[in-house]
View 1 (tube, rainbow, N blue to C red):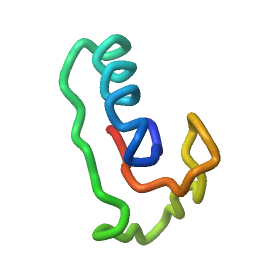
View 2: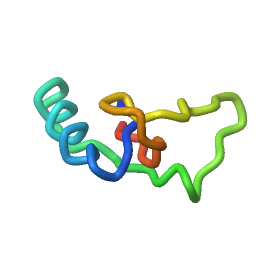
View 3: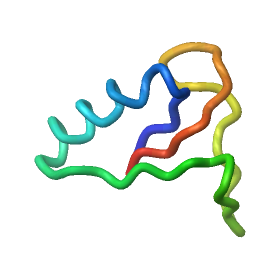
View 4: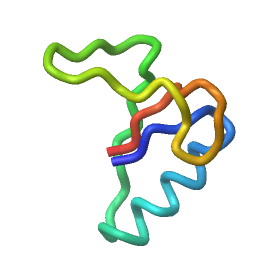
Amino acid sequence: MYVVCKDHVDVAIDKFIEEFEEAPDVVDLEHTKFIDWEPPVKCEECQHEARFLVV
């Protein structure tokens, strides 16, 4: 699972495919809320706002 900004979504998808050998789902955090989990505010690759969850 990767939480990234718009600029790093391709990097996260590539990492996911390399690790799990299948295509991930990409969730837009702007339109999705979770009951028991708060996503990180910052991108894992940089300090920009996290926007996408790659799972």
